Amino acid sequence: MLHCVKQVAIKGGENEMVDGFYVANLMKEKHPEHYKVLTSIPVDFRDYGTDAYTFHKLQRQYTIG
Image 1 (cartoon, rainbow, N blue to C red):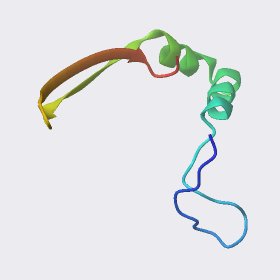
Image 2 (image 1 turned 90 degrees about the vertical axis):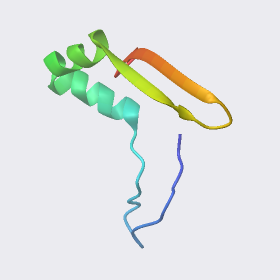
Image 3 (image 1 turned 45 degrees about the vertical axis):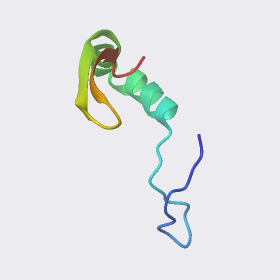
Image 4 (image 1 turned 135 degrees about the horizontal axis):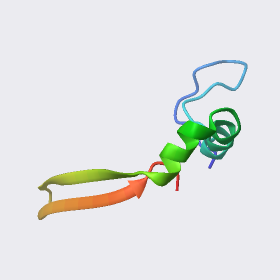
């Protein structure tokens, strides 16, 4: 995905987006023990409230899947 939400710099190409695949591979190479934690321990995500209807969502996913 390449998307520039807000152009910050006139030169250099800085923006607010990150190449997640690159970061994951870098973690795997340089910090394999941390990478293993992020790929093997699920994290709970909860969201509840009211919009057009009342909702309560619970999802369990790995940080890097």
